[in-house]
Length: 492
Image (cartoon, rainbow, N blue to C red; front, side, top):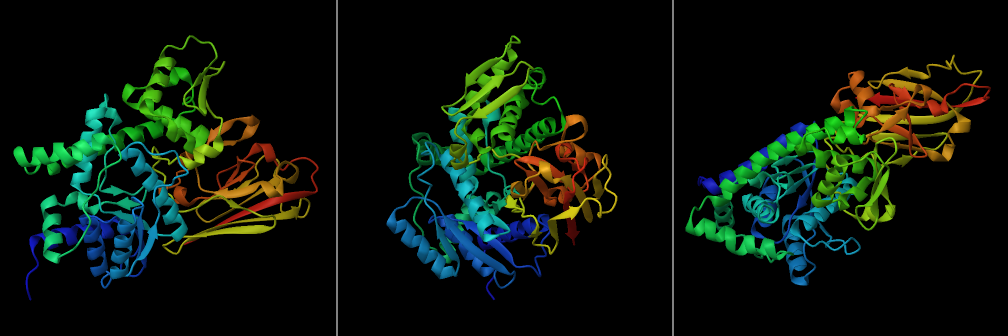
């Protein structure tokens, strides 16, 4: 038997390690479970190499492949892509960049829209994770483009080999470009060379700067820059986690005095997280320049209320109480814009907001065989077991829980079940708001369980965190003849 070349071994080995590590992180049994993978590919050489290796691994692992192409809409490229998918027996999904969204003006914005489309497809297909064909070339190109256009190192956004928050792995970031070139040549893989980028700066870096550096100075330039990007990525991850901890665990996070006191490296991140908490995906419209401008105004705040325009549809104000409040004048537009600043470490297990009928039940099942359910029904207040007027929480988030609520305060058509969100608060005794994350931490709930613990909301307000807290606005006291009973069960 002919021994495989180093290029084949390095390319195949990197992809296989990536799959195994992703499966382990997501608690999947790689020997027994079917792994449904979304392949983010195009028509270039690395995309063909990725599909080629994945196809060869089907005999070893139970891989189900769906390939997403959202590049240009040129007919010859789409036809080539369809031929690739047919050759390797993968389902093909062709989605050019959403023309209804604001037109992307840079490669970074285009990449953001690609990620948003990938996540929508992953949820719809109930796929486990995605695999991208990005290489050190892409990381070097991204880093140089930002270096030439940015004034602040903190603005850099780099590619990570494992981005489990977004359920994307990029195994080829760990492979030398020469190995990928050799692999494609040895296997005789045909492809369409990478075309021109949307913005001229990226074209300059891609077509002139990086080739010149590699040819005239150092052939390993791409790998060296990629290693720098990895270092920046680790620093970025640390800073984001620090910012998330501040926003999620400090009750003063919205206070202008608090924001002005935190380190400069965290300020714009904290501002963006606050905006995401208050206006959702519309926060994606806030550029670094806008966030820096907000930070400067906060530092100069004179104690008087003020209203400012951030974008055409997004404004922010300093309240009389000294807090920062973002306001979105066009919520629908915010849903169109890709959430490319989504930095929350909370894993997404596909728990889309789902209506909870009364009576009715919502069940969520996961890849590892576990499941959670929320059941709603109406019970007679007198016949139900002793429901205290002061403590209407029973059970725990680990197995089962039950809670009762005043039907007059909770319209049956208003109930939804969803995952926890950054900044969730629940109104407890005396109308006081407590952060859900802090309550979970105080109870010592492990992160894996937090990610899968359903939240019940009523009219967009948190009503119940199973086994943890119930909203005081729907307290089951008074002379009500009937109550709303919510039951939670978790099965391993």
